[in-house]
Image (cartoon, rainbow over all chains, first blue to last red; front, side, top):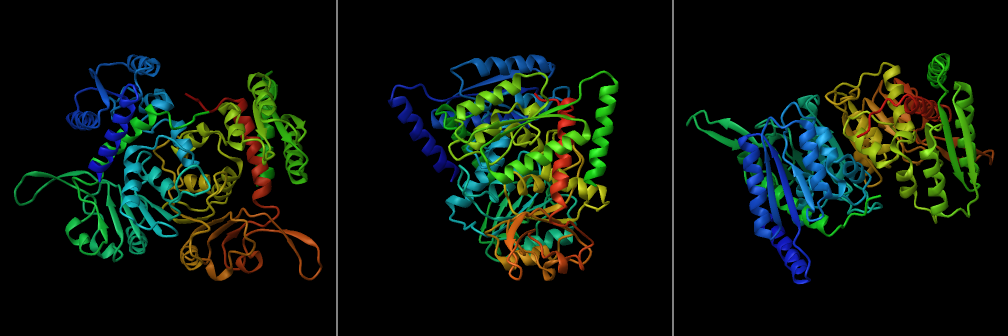
Amino acid sequence: MAKEIKLEVREAVQEMVALGKPPPCLTAVIVGDDPASHTYVRNKMKAAEFTGIQSKTIQLPDTTSESELLAHIHELNNDKSVNGVLVQLPVPKHISERKVCNAVAPEKDVDGFHVVNVGRFCKDLKSLVPATPAGVIEMLKRSGVDTFGKNAVVCGRSKNVGMPIAMLLHSDGIGETEACDCTTIICHRYTPHEELKRYAQTADILIVATGIPGLITADMIKEGSAVIDVGINRIKDEKTGKFRIVGDVDFEAVSEKAGYITPVPGGVGPMTVAMLMKNTLSAARQEVEYY
Amino acid sequence: MAKEIKLEVREAVQEMVALGKPPPCLTAVIVGDDPASHTYVRNKMKAAEFTGIQSKTIQLPDTTSESELLAHIHELNNDKSVNGVLVQLPVPKHISERKVCNAVAPEKDVDGFHVVNVGRFCKDLKSLVPATPAGVIEMLKRSGVDTFGKNAVVCGRSKNVGMPIAMLLHSDGIGETEACDCTTIICHRYTPHEELKRYAQTADILIVATGIPGLITADMIKEGSAVIDVGINRIKDEKTGKFRIVGDVDFEAVSEKAGYITPVPGGVGPMTVAMLMKNTLSAARQEVEYY
């Protein structure tokens, strides 16, 4: 599905270029040497290349001050050749993540982290929606999962993942955006496990974004439900002693009961990258009218 | 409780004045002749007078164009003597409510309807929170209702009431704001009634904002729960033929089962007005740092 979306973006980019317009341009800013961050940015840049989106990575040392980083962002905001700006998180501790996210111009904020984009999607207005939540919804829609009046349970209330997903799942068709119309339950680390289980068992759609490997077991699942696992956990295999990546869901057992399930790795991750490309295209086309 | 809050605001205003500062100033803009809107604005202005907040009402005819209204708002935004600006909703149909709400400067937006304030409270950042949702949370806190890890059900997903209440109820203490930490369930008109009943029966906190008189009956209530009725419905009494105001909750029967319940009229309404005064004070003190 991620490939399909990237092919659609590529086609749209080719159309733009055929009309004599420049291709969309995405710039990533990365501060410091976190290896995971570098891998993420590399994957994004590969997807950009695949889709024909021009891309550029600005690599800054982890000694960069907040004001230096903000100056870079302002420069990118003012650069008309740049359509999308993303600052790879996390930034070093001496820099305010919030200030950085709100420094990117809303119309170039392809990560959808600026308060203006957050406020907009929370009000069912067109906006640049964070790529992971957008990818989750896109998977449900493209898989033909019925959402209307269904029970959706979101485990995890992070501001970049769980919260936006909950907002999109309960969204109303009277806004500018497509409706999902789910009854939506937001669970989090202070939801007692027995309650989480009770809610999960009635969930037609279960989204898990907690960072707790194996949190969701087969006994918590409704037969035939759609399970989307946003977790990415690096755990040590007891037998081999090697590290591997797992999600928050016990994939093997749950996949026998669920109607739909995403694997980790290979599920939400690639969709996130694909939706970032879609956001960059959307930014280049100025599809959102800000005021 | 509303009186208590207004007395606290009055005391704070007196302190400001004693320090030689001007009292906070609230300006309401009202377009057209809707009698309910005029009543609401009058109540707000009365509360302002009580608390020592200076107030002014700008009355415009319903023939006012959108650009004329926006010009008035911009003037108030630029007027340093004005701390709070509210445009009484609804505005006439030829004017875009959204444009109007986003035209008020975020730092003067005492209704909390600007996308920047919405984005901020959705991210657990300090902001001017819409007065009705703020009043609902304030009632829970001041009544000593435990919210930590409890089940909260919100019926209704309107952008000015249900949505913000759900955001505040599931809020996390790692943000700038006080946490509620409820497991939060958002129900709406497409939630099947049987499901609504099932959720409501396990709710420690039940917030109802649907505009459906008598939607919540005693059989849907958990013994000892806190029930807050945001509904305001004008219905005809079958016996007397007279109109009266009722909420969305069957007050008489539910009040025998619930641990806490708000009446309609007299519950959420006065709290909303009191919280608007608190927001105006907060705006005058510039308590929210916008960036």
